[in-house]
Length: 182
Image (cartoon, rainbow, N blue to C red; front, top):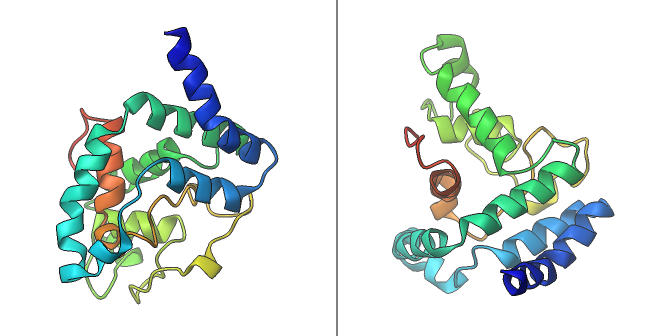
């Protein structure tokens, strides 16, 4: 156990240092490096559909303790503004208001509504109404970013695989397995 703990400390020490120093952009890149990398060439084949299975397998095998540690570090050092649990809380609030017509109208994308698209709009990853995803240059790497804006694990690299909410839904299913209604 002590050996595993020291290995985890060593593995996540760079992320911890970046978050402590408020270097949000490098911390975001480090988070992606530590978690879910998929060959970008596979994402170009059939709109990334074959890669989805690979992504699901990678996430399924990823140790939950490490996801929890990543979330803890992000949440702690952002004073509760960033992390998977912050994104999850926003998602829960959106799904709780599912039948609210004002909410649905607020988060329409190409005249359609989905909870994951609503989440992406709320946290600043998707432009309301147009369905255009924020480019890397549009990501805000500061505490002034929308609540839940970071980390952006896989947002760009995953292409279609994330754009339909798969990435976050898989992360959510791993962290919150009893709440699978998304």
